[in-house]
Each structure stands twice: as C-alpha cells, then as structure tokens.
Amino acid sequence: MKGIFYTLMGVVFALVTFFGLGPVLFADGTMNERILTLVVVILIYLLLGWITLGYMRKSKK
Image (cartoon, rainbow, N blue to C red):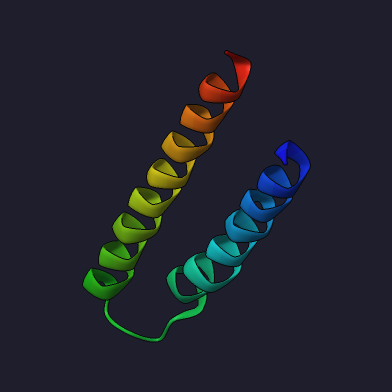
C-alpha cells in the first residue's frame, strides 16, 4: 500500500510540475497571470506535501 501511495504522489507531483510550471515559464500572458499561476502551483505543492507528510506519520504508527 505504501508503494502505491508513494508512486501515485510522485506521479501527481510530476503532473503538477509539468502542467503547473509550464504556464509560469512559457506563457505569453501578463506578468500578473504568471504570478497568480505560480502562487496557485505553490499552494498545490504545499497541499500535496502536507498530505504526504500526514500519510507518512500515520503509517509510522
């Protein structure tokens, strides 16, 4: 079960990186759009990290 969870989280992190940071780096929109997208991507990273840490602590017990 741990392996499946960590594999899934790795795939989700990779997808967020690909589809989240791509628009930040290569978008032809305004700087405000890029910054807003970056803030959203960082929030998604924090949420995913929080979920992963919560699972790691739960699975230790």
